[in-house]
Amino acid sequence: MKYSLRLLAAFFLTISSLAHAVSLDDLQQRFSQQPVLRAEFEQQRTISGMSQPLNSSGNLLIAQTHGLLWNQTKPFALKLMMNESRMVQSMAGQPPQVVTAQTNPQMFQFNSLLTALFHADRKVLEQNFTVSFRDLGNDSWQLVLRPKTTPLDKLFRQITLEGAQFLNTIQIDDMQGDNTRIRFFNQYTEPKTLTANEERHFSS
Image 1 (cartoon, one colour):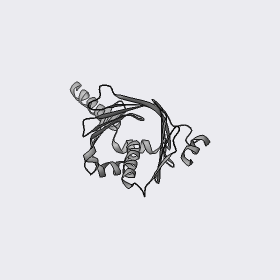
Image 2 (spheres, rainbow, N blue to C red; image 1 turned 180 degrees about the horizontal axis):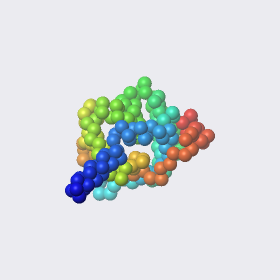
Image 3 (cartoon, rainbow, N blue to C red; image 1 turned 30 degrees about the horizontal axis):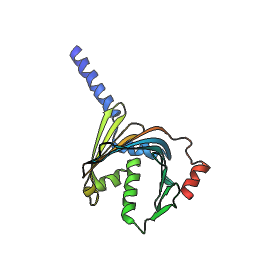
Image 4 (cartoon, one colour; image 1 turned 45 degrees about the vertical axis):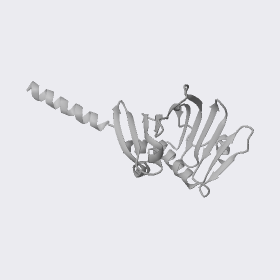
């Protein structure tokens, strides 16, 4: 009788753990319910032949209806705005550089992939990568992407994403042996619509 009770308890514990396991579909649904995401970031890039890594930091804004705003503040100011039709890079003292989907379609392929990373868009990811998803427990997860299409397979060895409620880290290992690690923190989703100031960044 005791053995049967232990077996039954183990069975329900197993069912319970499976019920709370995170899947890639869960992740996509979770991120799709975040119309606006704001975060700070720290980026460290290690380049072969350089003794010291390159560090940068700033803040990030992703709006499903507007695009992505990457605002680097250190070691120098650089602002990058991307949406479905154009990319604008701005640096202090220099005129903005504008690239459109028509003038550089390959750049916009990377733009759509970057958006897919932040939104965990399964369809786009599986079109371009071999996808390996792991539930790490405690609502944490890891997503490993290995490129299977050109030119991605000529540039990247793999891209590893980890997080929980939000995407917390991206590590990019390229074919030259260099790697980039980006850590996101202080993420928040309120307000769920853009402020007037945020709107101006996308319309400028």
